[in-house]
Amino acid sequence: MGKDDRMNADRSVHHPLFARWYACTAPGMERTIAGYRRELLAGLSGPVIEVGAGTGLNFRHYPDAVTEVLAVEPEEYLRARALTAAREAPVAVTVVNGIAERLPADTASFQAAVASLVLCSVHDQDQAVAELARVLRPGGELRFFEHVRADTPRLARVQTALDAVWPRVGGGCHVSRDTVKHIERAGFAIEDLRRFRLPDTRIPFPTSPIVLGRARVV
Image (cartoon, rainbow, N blue to C red):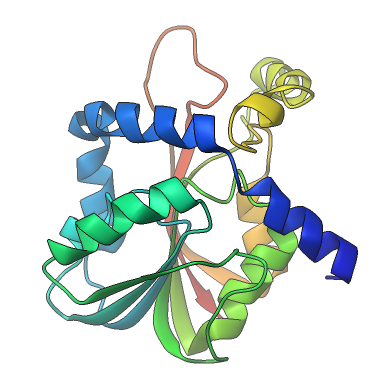
């Protein structure tokens, strides 16, 4: 990533209005999402890095076998909320400023990485996933829970059209990204993958196609 790209990435993560809206609405969605968060993190152990930690809603669900969590969050308002959540977490959580495309961590320093509803909004998805691969130890695991491009042509076309405007008002979120393809392209082997819609309504929302899975550095 060149200097101009890094500057653009740094600027793109500051969405104060969206951050406040997200912080207000996210707790109300937890009745639906909390179970998926537990499934996402189940069985993790050792040191873990979480990218785009938001307000820290994952923190309470980390299992005791996790020795530490480095939680990276670039948005100032969300990071302040995450710091509060970290103090109440059952495991040691350190919250730091940083972007997914340039993680503040040494190479091969984590047993696992977690990406939860964040890869839709990173400036450069390929670079972000490559960074996750870099900081993982050989054989390290990536856990991901993301909304992705639909596998039905009609909804995929709607998502593509929406991406012309939605990232500007939705905190940088893109609804048409084929995130699983980008994970595989970064050198991960998908070990488990589940696709579903959330919410599972008759007329799907552009953000309703979801993937929940595990991948390993090869």
